[in-house]
Length: 278
Image (cartoon, rainbow, N blue to C red):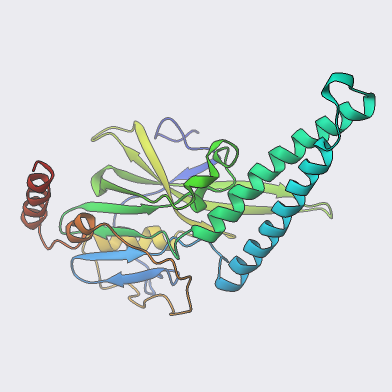
């Protein structure tokens, strides 16, 4: 049976219940909770396993690979006489084109890994019913955009604001067969943004990715947004050495996301609209 939220997200597995979750034990936040108070909470969406050591290793490997592919392009096109093409020249031109394509992808990976922020968090304000996304391409690296997006947009950050009432949850999964037999399955907790009071999807974003099936962040956030705090694990994510490129919320969004009431949010919004008209 397909998802009721259409168009359906890729690799859809199931639609998730939205509402209060109760369990015998405290609802885990999967050690992804960056901050929480009575007004808002902030969750980490840092890709799993991307620590400082792995990130530094990826930067080194991608840079070295980039140098090799550029050298391959140079060797392929060196000393080719376009006016008197031989069979071997056509082969080298073909190899050169392949090296150009590979170098484009490797450059994308190198710059993205180098300039991505330490995290791509999501903020949820239960007093105003708003959520805020700190978006970077690293969350979607590996999609078709890897081959179509300019690598020189690696520093680009997008901040989005949505109404919590328009957000629904979906679980997606992808299976990869192993050469030795068996299967490896990965899971992604996706949130779809629907037009108000409909099931028509107008946007979607990644909340979390897992190597095993679980719904921890989704259950925690749902209960928090419904002011059901008694069963929530409030432990913040562990402190660790992070990358120098920090999360930097725009001033307007930072103030709006911390508003203690809808009236305060509207006042902040009006102030910045007034400044924008000057």
